[in-house]
Amino acid sequence: MAEKLLGQVKHYFDHIGVAVIKLTGDSLKPGDQIHVTGKSDFQQTVSSMQVDHQPVATAAKNSEVAIKLDQPVKQKDQIFKVTE
Image (cartoon, rainbow, N blue to C red; front, side):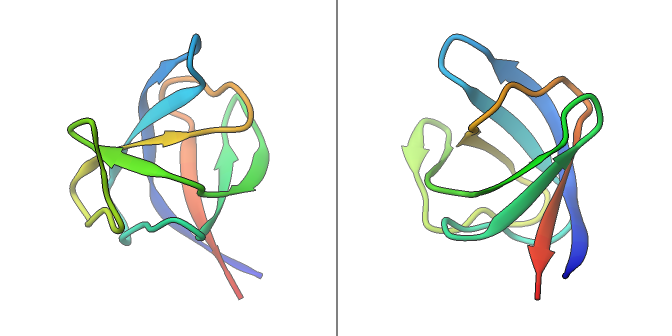
């Protein structure tokens, strides 16, 4: 499987398990598989996303998106999209 850099974690809200990610690469949508690397290292499927506190179906390049994560992350951890 190949990986493509999506962006990096700008902030993590540990009390709700949500990371704000600055997308500098490709777009992102629910159902995409991501790989988080840095201080953390895990893969998961994106289940839901929000932009400006509103659910979205797609987050475009150069936007900031909030996603629920299965594990804690640190600021500046990198996010990759896993492709087949």
